[in-house]
Image (cartoon, rainbow, N blue to C red; front, side):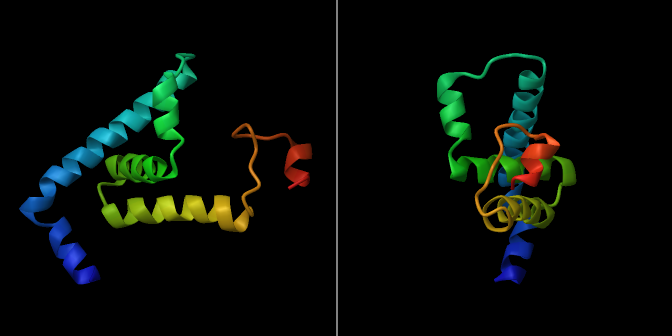
Length: 106
């Protein structure tokens, strides 16, 4: 199965999918930049981005747009979710960089 996926990823048939991944990845980067400069997110946009399946696709696509390697991209996404849901036992913070007190409470 891995061999088949590897062959498909390097075939001309996958060029379309790679381009779609890069477009979605560019979207993900633009969203983060927009938020960083204070531009508000649309209501429907936020609902889509908070869907776990959409997150998996967007995270993998953002990583793919940087690495140009599907395996690395998917692996990075899986590591992210493993840390969030398994290692952190679904305990999350409201912000990306919590205070030292919040970290100790984990």
